[in-house]
Image (cartoon, rainbow over all chains, first blue to last red; front, top):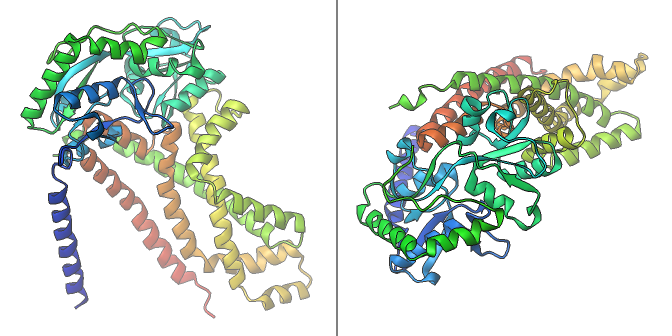
Length: 273
Length: 222
């Protein structure tokens, strides 16, 4: 008898999960509203400001694309999509598309579709203005900071400076505090993200970007796998953003204060290895 | 289906988890028992210290403690833990320190509840034959107390095993760290998550079963 109760309970749970999934389909765009995935913790790229507003280059791109898709500014809802959540958020239809420093890789391409790329970033090093680190191999024997398990951290261990002392934290903000206090000598990730930190008011003039181009990160706009209609529309929107000059303006406004020397806008579908 | 596991040292990462658990478990068993002894001691200052320690430490989130050991102890106060400047060793030792400090508070409370199960007459009888506080505690009270709290301590140990995942926050290469790395590279969130969840169940399930069996076997029959 007890066993049967368990079976009934399990079946109910399964059925409920089924309905829940069915309901959540395409929540990304209901009744003239659209939900877009961005990052909340990357100043200069995608950030939720203390006032509850959103700012950054990715936010500008996302807004431009949504407007081109026919949504008004007030109809856009931003949702945080952290790195491990991105593929599932697209698959479940929680968000229509994601603009969140989302590098196109073969593994990710197998799970979701990418429009773009809309930006070409490189792994780089951020050091204190008075630092004597000039190239990757200078780091051997020094302390370097990055986010636990991130692609940039793995690159350092494998290629750039295997003898560097790598310290890893959960967020880049913890690295920034270590860099300004002198506990670490450099921090590494995509130059776009580093430029965002260097451009923050409290950090202005304290740090410099080395511009080493240690890797190519092609930022794409993630869409649900197989959603070709949306992908094509987003590609058109990106092209329009570049040709109208809005792209250049957004880059300068968000990353300019750090003397960031950005790459020209990449061509749609052109992925630099 | 599981080809995303290629090239990753999953067992090595879980070995690191086991090491973290082991050293923190030994450390917190010792420090937690000492704290419990302080909390039942006749010296008001020690009682006060034990009470304050337990109530402060168990109410601070573990992630805050772990990150503090790295950003605070290591960076600001230059605590090196004898690691000789090796960042990976330092991070490992710092997280053992943080986990021990945190888990001790729970061990202390479990042991103290065990001490309360020992009949007051036992301690009175021990004092009557001339044993001092230390002897009463180590010879009479604690041996009986421990036998009563194996079950609760098993709970603490299982919680500790899972809490070691927080050490990824300061870059210790244990299971949760590898999971993060694999999700970043392979974009297979659910499958990878299941593999690691399974790994933790394999670690903690036998632990719980064994300690429950042991607890029943050693329970003081009254």
